[in-house]
Image 1: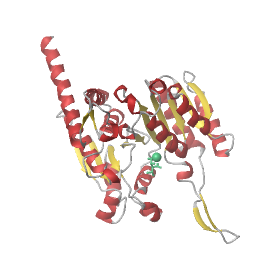
Image 2: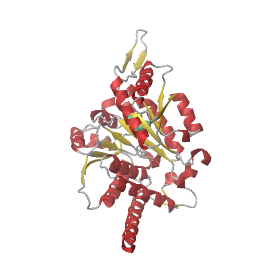
Image 3: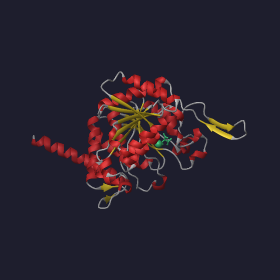
Image 4: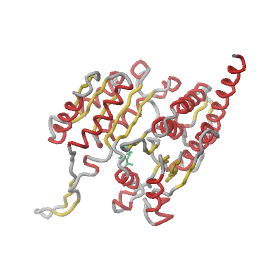
Length: 368
Ligand code: IPM
Ligand code: MG
């Protein structure tokens, strides 16, 4: 298991350290683990003058998976695009062809009070946003800024999708829907944009190969509304890059804390980049306050999707449930009556919960 570890900026290093700790605990001696650390974001600039140093790309290419923390510095919009710490992630996605971004929004029953929506609206929420990650207005050319014929400054980007890009994400979406409840909602803006008419057409055509999956379509504005009104009507949502960016943050907040949500960005095979959805959170960085559970849960997705270790992934997820049930909380999910812990204590508690599972399994074996 060759894993590139990219802690990055802000709270990235401290949460990634906890994920690595849990990873070592769950894999144990069963499989050789090779962890190679690589600099990214501001850390890349400090190490090699580039937010995505060539050495980092090289390490990524040789790995089976990437465990990513977060990248970006406050105010980095002012720096030219390619040199921004935050843009390193976009470059990595494009370079490695990580086109399929899985963003689950799952409500842990223990955290139902943390959602700003009424409990009866979010109870049992479990949806998957599948976001196309390497196309759309994020990467479409032409892009740029200049001065127009009236002498006024003007800037532009291009929303663009080729048929093959829509096809491949659609196939991933239908296959994902098959492993869940068999329902897929495609989100577009086909009432206004040509590129989204193509999106709808292609998704519909690909759907003919999956007669067992129930396909529906929504315009993105209506989808945003429905996500707030009745989010449990959704199971898998597939959408383009920018709509997915926006809807996944909205969906994240249904669960109460973005500090809990993992993500996976997959290339064509089993190669993936695993990353907590939360960003760098510079205000709390280095203070042992950040919630490491999103990073730990991202690592669990890595075990399942890159290493075919569903058993270990389940064990990590169960251990996370256990510490929440035991009342342990970092500040972002703190509720009165719970026990407030720091980043490291939370990681240690997950490891302890894994050990307890093992002890219990051993006991069962002994009894049988
Ligand atoms: C995300 C983030 C990124 C994006 C930023 C940091 C470039 O918001 O992963 O959702 O827009 O894709
Ligand atoms: Mg985003």
